[in-house]
Amino acid sequence: MAFCNKCGQQIDDNVQTCPNCGAPNGVAGNAQNFVNNFTNTADSTAQFDPQDIQNNKVMALLAYLGFLFLIPLLAAPNSRFARYHANQGLVLFIFEAIAGVVTGIICVIPFVGWIIGGILSGAVGIFGLVLTILGIVNAVNGQAKQLPLIGGITILK
Image 1 (cartoon, rainbow, N blue to C red):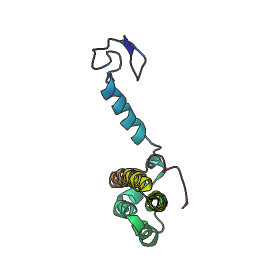
Image 2: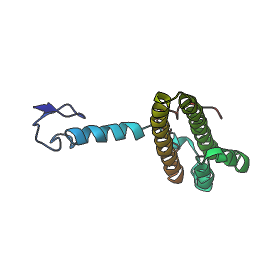
Image 3: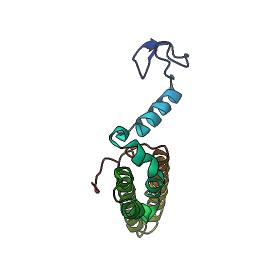
Image 4: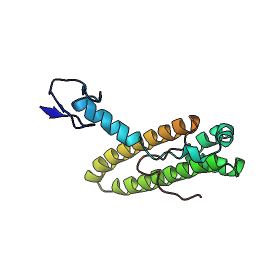
């Protein structure tokens, strides 16, 4: 017998979903829980003016494209929504820059550093791409959700 990851109900091992809450059982359920926990970050959309959100979705989207986080700050300086996403984009940009420097330093070490640096560089690159996509999706959907792991950092107020 196993227990549901979501509600704790005792369930049979061969059952695909929990009869009590409908949550998936087993490895697929654990993977789904991981994805849900990763993407379930603080959402402060209700604090923003709906008209501001509607007018500045494009500005917010640009904030996640590298150094283009500056465009929302310059083109929409009075938009709280664009500024929120500019902050998220700036934090992502700084994270990727620091990760690039660190992996570059590791890659200087012959042989072992090349392998570890290459693997680390690839992992950080994929993680950065995932965060970029999540940020763009949030901006286009008019949501002010923090990026996982790094979104709680505030540089621009």
